[in-house]
Image 1 (cartoon, each protein chain N blue to C red):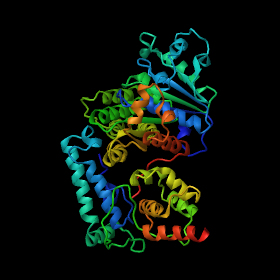
Image 2 (cartoon, helix red, strand yellow):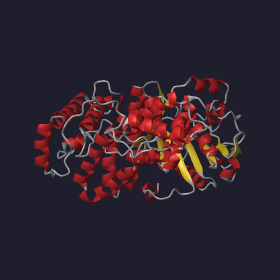
Image 3 (cartoon, rainbow over the protein chains, first blue to last red):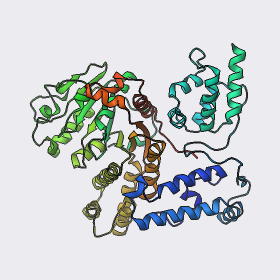
Image 4 (cartoon, each protein chain N blue to C red):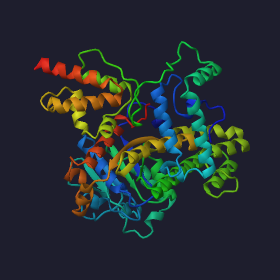
Length: 187
Length: 315
């Protein structure tokens, strides 16, 4: 049972600074949890409980996805406008549940160690990237370790780097280009 | 069950891991055997304990013939020390205590015998003791699960397995709460909740705590502490799709929101033909085919558990 005072953010497992994309992903995860045949809840909740939980998720999503309603809601919660998020939705659609938000770029040139530090700061395991991308985890280990001796040809490596960047929330194109350019000049 | 183990301190040298699941036939023993194999490869000294006292088969997963000495010999005091039933496997640093399939009724060992086994297992001079638990939710199995520092819960993405998994988690937690209950009246409330069709309508640990609070407000703090320290880790075995992998994340969210249980997701292992090929040859798939997807995923799980990582869902 949800505590009665739970915020819309809490319902979706989000912090108050969640981006539009994060809200979309969290909503998909939560909505999937309460679908009629969802494995994780079918034996846990009866129909009534499931519908109530689903309705609570929909209510939270309806407010948080709407910039004006969210702004008003944040004001009611007393969230200060300094820490408030950008309410503008991004152009691109959200990707699968395990992908991450906000595409940022690291200072160039990007090294394997930079990537590893960033990934760890996001609490993402290498195997999650491997699972999401269907690329063997060892390739990501080689990338992070700058193992030039065993890294695949650039044509493949570019794709792996982009997958890596996409999952950890870096800009895929810039990350791949910076990493590859550094490898090329070092050779 | 030590409270200190929930703290993020440097890992103690000796750890007990357990793998339960509530349901048979979901690959628990294979997971245990291959996790043990990887831990040994990582340099840990490991003893696998086949605690499936009714249906022991861990030796077959490892390609070891049924050992002459088993846990049953220790339970029945035919040998003096638990070390006397530890046998080597073909793999360096990996040893085995075979299950007691020869002992009629061994699955129903007495309380004193169980305490003796648990204490001696914990005192084994190794880095990791890995307990492979039997199916079901008998008190013996739950106690082996609860004694562990790392309690893994294996499920497959099928309704029956998930249902049994929840039953296992609730039963284990209620047993833990019962042991921490300060009064007979509180124990009675917990016993009532264990009956799934209980008249009080208690359907989740959160409702149980609310019921205890109504009965005895002073008692609830101790139970809340136990709930906070209860930390099962899911392994989703035999996945075939990204949706199957996501089931692990959904289980963690459902546990948090509807049971108040802080679970985590240790990882998923793909359904893999390499596994049954190895099983038919009575070989360990992780050793036989270490590049197979399932073997690599088990390796990631083992490393993640050693390093304290899990598949956290970060938006």
